[in-house]
Length: 537
Image (cartoon, rainbow, N blue to C red; front, side, top):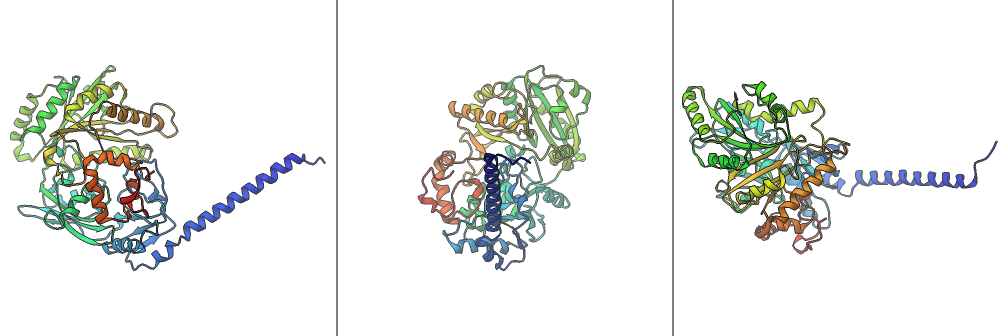
């Protein structure tokens, strides 16, 4: 029997030693994670809810499906006091601890913003505060938990014939999540974003204080938190403005081949009083079959015409409008719709209409979600890019991007529609272009896992980078919505002249940078006022 050569024995021994070391170090890592020095102190906190130190993987994922940072623990609070107790505990430890905390709603962040690497993720959907409370009268409103889903608010308020004024396209998001950004949809041109339609908040600051704030009480904190990216406090309760809810919706789409006519008509509609209740639009690049390129549950009265339509490689633009109504006003509504449409310059044969309930219209994207889930196409990477572009620069942007950098819309829709700046409150933390009208352009792409083609993650990220570089080179004055940066100097450029106020508010309400570390704006355990601009990586 032959023995293996000496050099093979040495290689085998080295392999065995390396394998043992890997297993040993892995076990040490596991023990360190499970026996963190912060774990005993957290376990002693007086809570009505509970911590989970083992099943934390779900808190390291989000809708973007690109970043996964494991927290040390997940807090499932039953009361607002549970959240305040946690934050106060971290605050009392002081800067010697690197422990951070992030509020997580329904997990629809795109780039790890609601994650807390090695910290504590607060599961806001566990918050068991008072039920949704609807108040009727001349100025109706609803008091809701920060962890409540907008779809639930819709269903509850409809019982009283009421509904919130401003929405997002997707309703299965939490109140605290959208108010920490802005909350934009096709109603924003008339009512402003969701942050313009909230009158009071309850917030847990970075010092563990529970504070009620509004325009008349603790107003600086109120405006700081709205659009504040979670940097100044965790929203635990909100007072949302309501209006009378309609029963049905006329849902209309028209097509344009000329971008100038498309934007002119959009801007005309958002300046009128009796035009439509909702105005959006999207781009169709190199697609055939309108039904295949129309996200949501839109079913035109003439589906055959829509299915047979071919763009022949052209870039087309779809204007999407909705008119709310009750059946007793149908004649008046029809006249208003006909008048508004007669003032538009769309392709005459390209008008498509549908009629749905108010609930079905608002929850339209959820229907698409169910279809995608059934095909295992929902839990994929979503490298979305959302831009706010000044009206004066939108044509330059369109010429440089549509059909050039972006050559097809098969990976997901491109939304484009204008909003009025006058409907936004400049006291909030959200950053928008300075012009009176600006456009939201949203590239809502989905990447096919493991693909190396044009539908793959790498290609889409390169495409997004090219779009941002074009905007920078052309000096378009673009601001990112749902922004994501990795360096503090990039955040400083994003906020521009508002940066100093943003930093000042941080030093007031979260001086140890405990909250929302996933935004990567400030770094815990280093006094952020003295951080160098290159310290955030």
